[in-house]
Amino acid sequence: MDQKPGVPLSSIYRVFFEIGLFSFGGAVSGWIQREVVEVRKWMSYEDFLSGIALTQILPGANATNAAVYVGQRLRGIPGAATALTAMLTGPFCAVILAAATYQGLLGLPGFQEAMIGTAAAAVGMLLRTSVKSALLSARDAAAIFVMLTTFAAVGLFRLPLLPVIVVVAPASVGFTYWSIRRRA
Amino acid sequence: MNEDLAKLVIVLAPISLAAFGGAASMYAPMQHQAVDVQHWATAREFIDMFAVSRVTPGPGSMLGTLLGWKIAGLVGAVVATLALYVPSSALVVMVGSVWNRHRGKTWHSALEIGLAPVGAGLLLAGVLTLARGLSEHLSSIVVILAVAGLMAWRSKLHPFVFLVGGGVACYLLYLAGG
Image 1: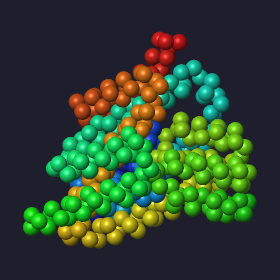
Image 2: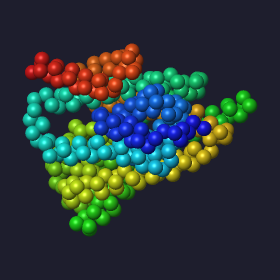
Image 3: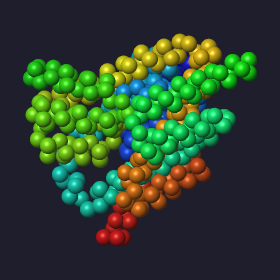
Image 4: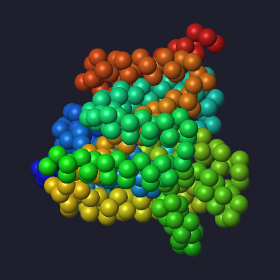
């Protein structure tokens, strides 16, 4: 529906190479959303957010899963392979380089503080995009309830992800299905 | 050499498929396998690799890459990285294509609309979890809020500006304080 077969693999590679290389602190899905949905308009918010839900339920690093989902939506399996390779190229080189120079870097005064600041900035970016997603998906009282329940269970009470999703996701989807049918 | 590579795949691929909840859930089983079962590294070496993988960029855990590098050099690093990321990615491709083949049907719209607030809730929970990990450093909370506010105000700024800005700010605070 929103598929844009015109997005070249080289563009997919460039976007995810950059995201992978500068992904500090784990706050990556917000950045992917910004690049793919807001700046380049490769897919819609709803498409992206439902993909995020799907890729967080499935095992594996959420960021690479999200990249693979976007790559596949845009260009099928070549797109997915391109996105994954792009995400891993920079970090792969960086981590091996760092392993070789780590002891020396740790000795640098302020090195760890600078890394913490970088991670905090990444979390701030995620905060802003999360609030935006929250406002967009809060279509009605039921959606707000589902969002807050998920947030509280996983974020506040730190319940394991899988059981929470097994309860909340079918309930939310079932209720949505019911209300779509009722309106039709 | 080839035996080492095969072992990397046999040990890491199942961890890839069992990592529910993201890359952080890989640490415990990886530590167990690398230190206790396979004796690829001592507990101390594993902690060092963990630290290195945290201060470098990465979509999740590049810890496996370092393990592979230690065991079998560059080839080992490539094999370990693929073993950790290809199985879970293949699963995303398989489920994702089924996901998209049924676009336009009522149940698919229900899934998409119904899962959107679940995804948003998970994103917000991620912010809280990550902020908690940084909360012992008061300056990092200030950076989080400042970046979020700045980004709402000037959303077209390149993300790198924020990342470097945050790093520089905390480095300067360290200089001022120390």
